[in-house]
Image 1 (cartoon, rainbow, N blue to C red):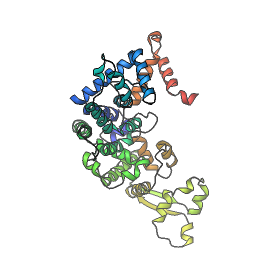
Image 2 (image 1 turned 90 degrees about the horizontal axis):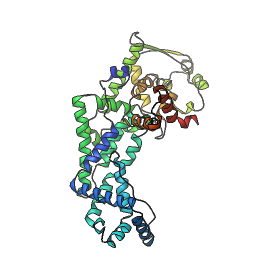
Image 3 (image 1 turned 90 degrees about the vertical axis):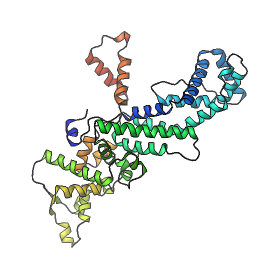
Image 4 (image 1 turned 135 degrees about the vertical axis):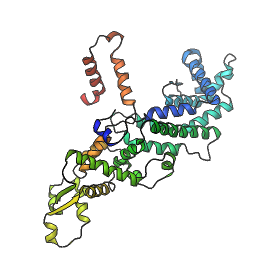
Length: 395
């Protein structure tokens, strides 16, 4: 659940966890007889080398003979799709050495990987290439993630677009992943939150890292999911920001501002802010330049809220931020230039696109409340979890 003010502005009560969607989509795509058989075969190989010192020694010798870097096999975990990819990649890397061990051992000769299974392995790895980066982004717990939801869908559309190098297995995996996302999000909107995509589009727009994409012309990914176009998003942003202002101050729909001369403004700006054009200077640039006397005198202007917000929006979409920038810090630095949009950003960035951070806290709590520490008071558990989670800031 999100703050009450946020729910009043947009009719969205719950965002489907993007991390679970991605995991379930990939798991669903790998649920074919050929792929499941290949994965089961790989698990048997991994289990043998993990459980037997004798066969680990044989594998080590085969790696040395074939001049292969010495590595260990990796187990997969049912709740983490990335572990399957890592397991497959490691089995593929050590395949010549493991096959050499199996082909010289009558007991486990059936564990040798044939060319058909090797091709299936390559197809799966090719289809899943690039998805690990998305998982890393979605797993962030100290950064804004809701604004990355639409970029996530854009990237998924690109990753699931087949190319000439893809075989039938890779194409099928990609198509299943794409269809799964479309079906689940469409079903959620029909049953729960019809304005979900508008909410996510506004969150994307309010993240300066994605501005160039958010205000660009519609693309194939937009047609795929059917999220609102940029003009509809702009109108919604201005309307919601207007509600925030009117909810805080019920005066007439008129704002009176005093604009100071350019030279006076620069005297009060820090060297860093001189590089960024302020909203006031933007408003001045739209006015006709008469003479120096008129420019140097403070100007009393009366504008409607709608017009003021539209100008603030137009100024904002001309800004940009580095992809590694801290979004909250960026808005803190630009709060004076973009006062109304900064308020709107505070509401939207309280939402999370994934439940990974909360689940990480559950796991952390489980490590603290163990069998030997099962008598801890709830208040003490809360303090220990807080200290453990923020230990990097404390130490």
